[in-house]
Every structure is written in C-alpha cells, then in structure tokens.
Length: 165
Image 1 (tube, rainbow, N blue to C red):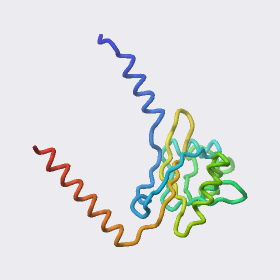
Image 2 (tube, rainbow, N blue to C red):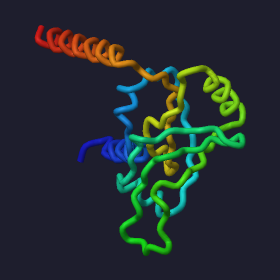
Image 3 (tube, rainbow, N blue to C red):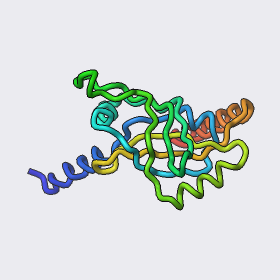
C-alpha cells in the first residue's frame, strides 16, 4: 500500500466540496466583465436539491437592487422530481442574494453608470454552501464580439504552435 493514500481522498473531497454547479458561458461572450462578486443565495430545500442535481439555468438571469437588497431575477431552477407539487418551489421566483451592505452600496453606485448591469456568472459549492458569482458587465456590440472571438482564436493558434515545439 502506498503512502499518502489518505491525502488523495482528502483532495478529492475538497474538489467535490468546491465544484461548479451551473455556468453562464454566454454572459462572458455578451458582456465585458469588469468586476466580480461572490454572494450567498437564499434558497428553499427543494431548490438546493435541484441545483445540486445540475438543474439550474442562469442564461437569462439578471440582478437588481430593490429596497436595499440584491435580487436575482429570471433564473430557472427546475422543480425537484421527488417532491410533491405542494412542497415544490416556483422555478422562476425572485431570490434574495446575500451580500454586505457596503458591497451593495458600491454596486448601486456602479450600476448608475450607463450601460452597466449585474449578471449571474456561475453557481458553485463552497464547502456545503451554494454561492453565486455575479459579474458587473458592460454589454458588447457585435464588432466587439467579433474582435474578442478573433483574439481568442489567435491565442489558441499560438498555444498550439508553441506546444508543437
């Protein structure tokens, strides 16, 4: 038996405890992300089970600040399959995000600028807690998207060329 066998299982447990649950890949294409913020999210039990099963869709989501609270809108979390209809949650309900007052005030000041918006980037586990990463983004125009795609392609080709030598 090899030494350090227990360390592999501990590393695997840490990786499983910090895994990605849902990702909004389209957001990074449509927006220039200027700043990110990790927040908690207020969920009910069936939502937690559905998210852990990978049943969350962040694609059309956005965040607003109402009554001094961060709110997550238009994020679809599918109803849990093993729960009855009475105990299940509404898939598109508005969810409260948990952040410090100072962070919310800073975001409010930045959102007052023209063209900036808060978008959900990913849902991930941090220990046993489900966290949401928000991005403060500025919408890209079509020519910006093309330029970004071209730069990405050039970087990919140079990496491939360097790996051959």
